[in-house]
Length: 350
Image (cartoon, rainbow, N blue to C red; front, side):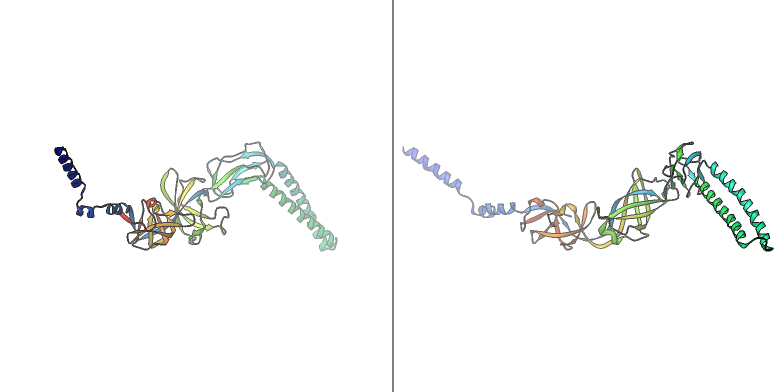
């Protein structure tokens, strides 16, 4: 019995000695110190520095010919000849289409004969007027008849010219839409002629950039399937903003676009100016809100949510116009885990 009691006492002493901890160890690595270290959120940061910013706008555009006209005959009638070389160049004034005009030519010949007779009559009455053989009224009526016939002849010549369709300018003929022998009217489309000298570029820019655009400004653009970069000169803009899109329509003249086709889609890059002290941060650092935008800035080791205003947006960076200062460090990762005034540490700073 005594032996059992002694063994029990020894076991109690061993358990008591194992349950004691070193005071130094308890003070250095206790629960309070470990929880404090776990509450600090480590994120990646970005230091705001003034940089040069080239302010540019990318827009979608369309190439159009410098001149494009849908050809229509001025008179109605049967087509007797066609000279519409599809896909080929024509010169200004070239005869493209001829409508039957034999009836008008016959009418013109009739008037020419009547004019000769009227001129002879006028001459005779003029001679008689000199010797008082006829009255002045008779001579005036004969002279009036001559002028009337000349006017009628000019009207017939105009109608004959209307039976001819000529090229309005140097250009390239598209696909013709009629055949010889067809009966046409002024409403009948014949073909489309496009000027071969130059192309124009139509595009639209947002309303807020409208006051930065000037005539003779240079823009660059590219077209699909072609790595070459082309340039164009701004000619004019619309004098009003489109109500539906809030955009300003712009037209530019393409330089050296001989290998381009009208109607092609163009991606336009318009440089509006340079800012030497712009503040840029990564796009992912901006937190969009319902009414504003925020970024998280480190102040004295704590996370501060700051309302900012953005400017020009690039592929990976965005300009901040209000809210932050040069030298501020903003968080670019882990924003979902940060709370206002929470401790913050940076595992990497760019």
